[in-house]
Image 1: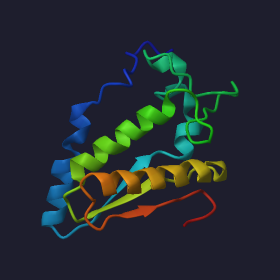
Image 2: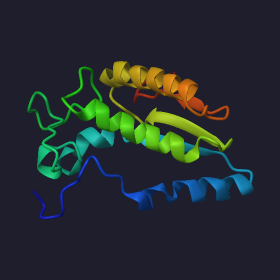
Image 3: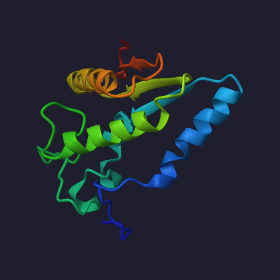
Image 4: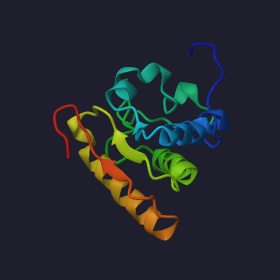
Length: 150
C-alpha cells in the first residue's frame, strides 16, 4: 500500500460530479462531450492503484479473482461486489447528465478483448435503466476494445 487513504467504494466524491457544470459549459459552446465510464487497459495495467484492489478500499472488495495482479473488474464473471459498485457509479453519472443533449457515453476505452461480455452487459443495463428512469436525451453508447469498435 502507498500510505494514501483508502477508497470507500460506497461513497462518491461529489467534487468529481462537477462534471455537469463542464458538460453544460461545453453545450453552451456547441460542443459534444464523450464520457468514458471506465478506464479500459489502464485499469488493468495500473492495478496497484485501482480502487478495486483490496489494498486500496475499505469495503473488502478484491477485484483480482485469480490473483494474477491484473484485476478482473472488466471480465465476466465479476468479483463479488464489483458489479453493484460499477452500476451505482453508472447510475450516478447518468443521473448527473441525463437531461443534457450533448453527451455521448463510452463504456470503456481500449479495454482488452476479454471485456466484450462485460461491456455488453453494461450497455444492456444502461438501456434498461434509461427506459425505467429519465431517458438520456439521444445519447449514444459505444463499446470499444483495443482491437475493435462496435
